[in-house]
Length: 240
Image 1: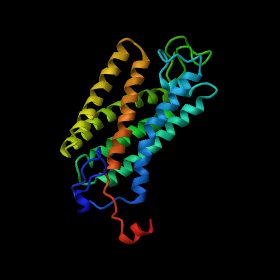
Image 2: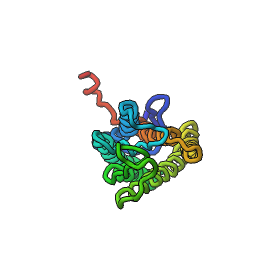
Image 3: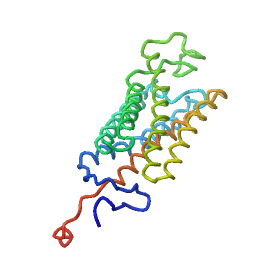
Image 4: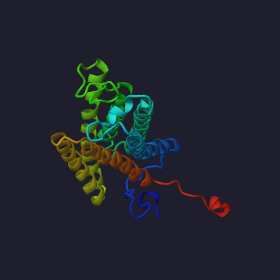
């Protein structure tokens, strides 16, 4: 059986394009993206649970960057952004010349850059947090607060378009289930964001963000799992 027609597991994308097996560096870069979404979400949820003076209904996750332990969320933004940028480099190496091979990595890189913006450019205090902040929105936006506000729609737009682009890839490679998941994620993200703004309730928007972050990690995981494998030599097989 040739390497080009071998599938990896029941859920793997068929490797039918005859591509060589990726380097170890590419595998590590992709693994960074698999880790990024769950790590960012888990760290955020733990902080919401630990900070009694933060209300996730009225305080977006960016507000966790403020206060005595704000450095944790700042680091969370920066680490997740760097992991996602690494995965974008891995996706570019892995998918070059195939469906989603151009725009997919670019959109994932924009998503990672937006998270980096969220960490480096800290939000302004408001809605009573931290102690002494205005009871409502910030009375005056700083330059970094204004740029921070732009990071969220930039991330959202990148994730939505990326879900559509990778949905196209999955459909082209006969992974119709994952194509439906990708397109459904784009719709759900937009829907939850709109509902969260109308209610308003930041928990709903957090749910939409969680879908997007986990989708990006799962999609990277699917591409990683479907990578062509290096054939094992008979001598290596006997050694094991």
